[in-house]
Image (cartoon, rainbow, N blue to C red; front, side, top):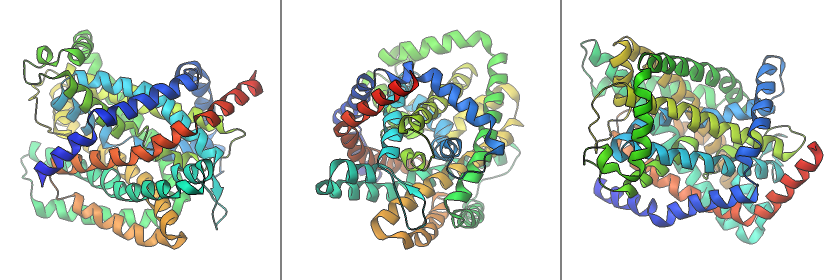
Length: 454
C-alpha cells in the first residue's frame, strides 16, 4: 500500500499539478496587478487595526475572527513537522520553493477570500456560508455543480487527513520525544489513550458550532504563534553567525541540491516537488478551504477580506515556516537527508541550542496548533458535508472526525503525510479551475475597490 501511495503521490504532484498550481498563481498575480506586493501595506494596516480592537469586538463575523479561524486551520503542524520534512526529503532548497509558492499563494488566497465573500449565501440559521463550492455553483453556473460536489467530497476526506490525522500524528511524535528525553519509552497503548482523550475534547468543541470555533481560534492562534516565534528568535540570536550560511544553503540547494546535501538529493525537481507540495500543505493556498472561513466576515467590500487572505499566507509561510527552517539549519544538528523524521528534527534543533527542557514547550505548542487546526478543518469539513448532505450532517461529521483523532494517534508518519498530500492535490484542481474561470470577476472587484479607496 505504501508503494502504491508513493507512486500516486508522485503522479499527482508531478509536472501537471505543479504547472497548474504555479501557473494559476502566476496568472492571478498578473490579474490582480501583483496584489500580494502592492496591497501588502494596506493588508498589514487592516490586520493591525482588527487585532487592536478584537477584545471589544463581539461580532461573530468580524474580519479578524474569520482570519483567526482560517489561520487556525493553516498554522499547524505543517509549520513545524512539514517544514522539517521538506528539508529532510528535498534538501534546504525545498524552502526556496516554499517561498515561491508562498508569494504566489498570497495572490491565490487573496482571490479565494475575495470571491468567497462575493459568492457567499446564508444558511437556514442565518449564517454566511461560502467557499469554492458556492463560488463554482453561483459563479460558473448550475452545469458545473458536479465540480462543486467533487470539491466537497475531497474536502470532507481531507478534513480527516490533513486537518486531523497528520495533526495528531505530529503531536504524538512531539510528546514521545519528551518522554524519551526524560528516560521514558513510547508505547502504542499510551498513544491510543492520548488519542481518546483528545477525541473527547474535540467532540465537545466542534459540537459548539462555528461560533465556538471562532472564539477559540481568536484566543489560541495568536498566543501559540507568538510564543513559538519568540522561542525561535531566541535560538536564532544564539546562532546568529549561522544565519547567512542557512540562507545560502536554501538558495544554492534550490538549483543544486546535490551540492547542498552532499549528494544525498541529486534532483532539483525533487526539491521543487517537495517544496511545492509541503508549501501547499502549510499555507493551503490553492485548496480553497480557508475561503470557507473568510466567507463569514462582515466587510464593506469583498476585497477587504481578500487582504486578510494575503496576511494569512504571509504570516504562515513567510514568517512562521521561515522561522522553523532557519532554526533547523542554524542549530548545528545533523540532517539525514532522504528520511522524513517529521517533528523530531524540529524538536532536536531547538533542544540542541536551548536544552532538553524546550521539548516540553514544543510539545505544548504542537498541541495548541493541532487543536486549532483540527477545529478549523472541522469547520471546513462540516460545511462541505452540509453542502453535500444538508444542514443535519454537522453532528455525524463531528463524531467521525473525533474517531479519526484516535486513528491518527497510532498511524505511521510517512503514510499519513502521503495520504494528506494526495488529497490536497485532488482538492486543489476544482478550486484552481474556478479561480481561473472567475478571474474577470476578480479583476472587476479589484478595480472597483481601488476606485473606492482612491
